[in-house]
Image (tube, rainbow, N blue to C red; front, side):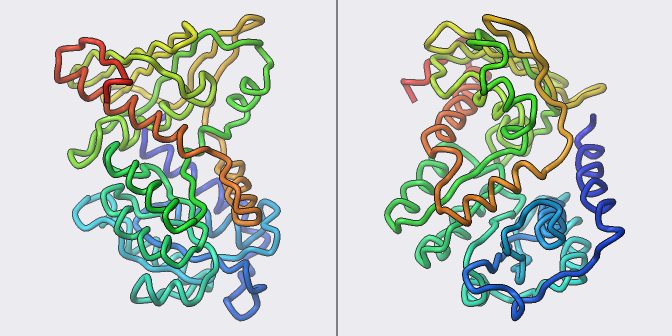
Amino acid sequence: MERRTFIQKSVALAGGMLAANSTFAREDSVILGKRIGIIGLDTSHSEVFTKIINNNLIDSQGFKVVAAYADGSRDIPSALKMKPAVTNAVRQMGVEIVDTIDDLLGKVDVLLLESNDGRVHLNQAMPVFKAGKPVFIDKPLAANLKQADEIFRLAAVWHTPVFTSSALRFEKNVQSITNGTIGEVTGADVYVPADIDPGHLDLAWYAIHGVEMLFTVLGPDCRSVSRVYSEGTDLVIGQWENGAIGTLRGIRKGASGIAGTAFGSRGIAKLGPFETYNPLVEQIIMFFQTGKPPVAAADTIAMFRFMEAADLSKGRGGKPVTLSDL
């Protein structure tokens, strides 16, 4: 499906399930330790995640979104356009809108850093890390590999639990394959919308959904990357240390969607398509409950190395780039 359709479907999935129950808890009715704050109301994820959690469309384990800080991107048109409507939507769900991140930190115990723009995540995460409050940082974690490294470094300095993930990592078919249904995975092909934002690595802005699927089923040990680029399409080929090959087709022209195929020693199975954010939000709630990230920092950094290598390969006319050289 197109990127816009994907977003509209996501909101509708959560919104449709609310018709029979629209009661939302405010801060004073939430158990201490389970108050969620949101940073960034310039993405549909902020609205959808609030609906899922506060209406117990999953087992929210007592967690509620109670407050939010609206500012996210400073210059991405799509994000700036979305911000007023999302802010109004979460306010109508009883979420208090505050003026600063410091104000937010005084009202919540854990955080969703949802700002649409990966460039602002490092600065927005800093006070959260210093406060020691567990935080999920939505995709893209950062604009580039250097920023991603710094986010995890500073989180470790302040001993603050953090993780990031696309919803596609926890998609049911992807998880089935990681649980061994087709045996050892020998390769995977994925396709994904691949809009590019000039402030981010090309694959980080949206094609990261496909990168996440590849790394979930193939693991983090990608050895080299080559990329063929045209105005409407990318073809990125990764070679893994165990001999597996993963390909990503990034689509900017014509029909698109988020899905793929995995190849294994005992079978072939589909990856995707996207259906719901619920599995990701369940993982976030479990993370808030335990403080244990479901995705290792090293796995995310491996993805950023892959995406950085893809940009370098593009600049070198498609020549392979070895990830260990980055």
